[in-house]
Length: 264
Image (cartoon, rainbow, N blue to C red; front, side, top):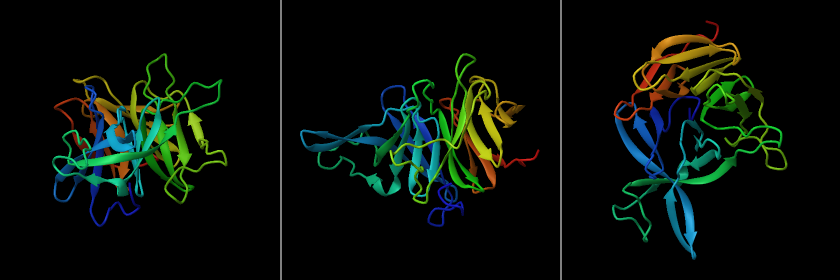
């Protein structure tokens, strides 16, 4: 999604996210679809200790990504969305540089800033469980949604991007959604927007295949067992295929299917 052509410097690249339950933070894996080679990149936060620069792992769930231009937007649940610029990618010596800890990674990607999850006082704070990029007749937009059970909100929303590949903001620096819908499917894991219609995935545990939903947020139709167990974030890669990645350890698959017709 980085470019309308589906290419980055002439190459077809895919990026997926991981998170650790052991305090090791979040990482990205950049996969070259031509050579079938990949690199792991640790996402880090810059730090300063008595004027000494350093980094620490970014400890977020990283439930989904949106790659738009030079920026990668990382879903960070209650914190909002973490934003990285790929020009900041660091290739580290094997033993680090200047005493900077590399945490066993050759490549580090510092986070530049947050889009903080803030709402009006009478509105429940949005949980950025997943994100994706939508190309619409009104320009590119950031899609975000909430994973939730029957007692939680399960909202879907869209924000407009500006010409600089960042979200459009008002004079106070706030970003207002283009639309917000509640009542999405239980346990949504990812969603994309296709000119008035939505597609979403839901998971049913580590042993039951997942489902794909389509339609309006409050009246989506379900297709059972459409994807393997544990489907996560969705994206429309190069306007051709619908991509997802599954989440369960030792059974993480990156897979693509034909992009569905928005009218079917």
